[in-house]
Amino acid sequence: FGVARAAEEEGVRIPEQMALACLKDSQLCPIFSPPLTALELPSHRLGMVAARMLFDCMEYDEASEVPQEVILQPKLKVRRSCGNTSPIY
Image (cartoon, rainbow, N blue to C red; front, side, top):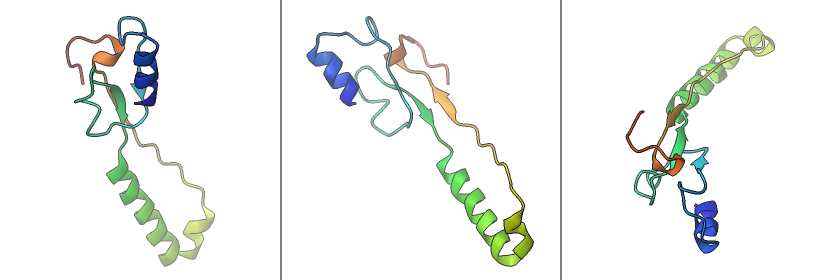
């Protein structure tokens, strides 16, 4: 939001002169003008996975010694701040 404000102050038009995206989708992104492209992070799923890993460590001592890799996919919500004219998410 700060970048958008600075661009406006400098007379830079979004998305005509500069595409803009942010790393965390919020309730303000779709109502911002122009609506901001953003990543929707799987926060709820991340919390569930972290809790499960914590419970496993508490329940089984050896679970804490085994490295684990968890990949959670964010969702890209492409909106007009990148020049998109129709919703594609």
